[in-house]
Length: 307
Image (cartoon, rainbow, N blue to C red; front, side, top):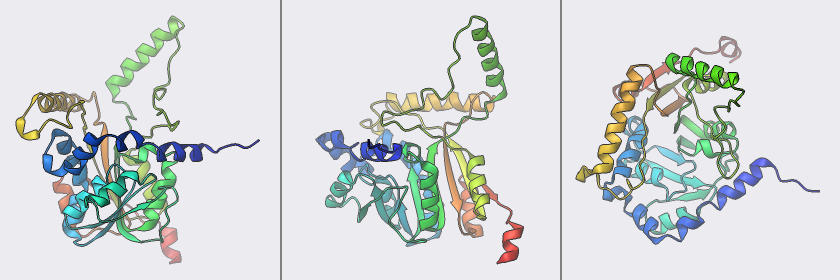
């Protein structure tokens, strides 16, 4: 009797995930002109791509690998529009082939994020936007990104909600107590955090990244939490029209920001940069200006003694 490992089954399902998109001519047209159409959806994603700006500005002609960038290589396109050189990668290269044919990206490669076919320090930077949480073993992928990068690794991902703000924790405890009284089942808070291919949907936090960086004796990391709000149809609404979807998005963002101020909520996404080399002061100032929290890390004194 043969068995298929969990991760192998996940790779297979993910590698076939773009079949519907490939047959949708409107979707192809949308992404071909994505950066020119100035939609509300582009506005959303530009906020995420902006994590790269301080590094693109201070490291001209830098080399990048974008990981899980199979949706036409949009992250690689952004990098090359801002002076970097990018290799777009994914476990399914169907749409990356189209993107190169349409001259949207300059190069691409088939790449399993958990087993990259590249030498150590092959690129200055690696960037993974909203794909990390789809990997069956994302920590393996993170160590691979660290391995193939010289300077830094960048992640844009859903943020871990733990720890709960105190008011929510109190309310949750009361709710659970009442459920126990009536002998009603208390669902685990991650019950719904599984996607159809079978993967658990990971979220990340500053602290878990800090521990990984400390374990590898890396010099620093930076982070910024933010709200990402999506309504169906933002792909077609132009930002310049100041239409109903943009107004709904901004209104919801204001409500969320108010709840954050009151201690009732945390932003639902996070930008994280893990540095392999300590950045210069200009880069640090640029990060702080862009509302990143820059965290220098202590060096391992025992490891330093052996070097």
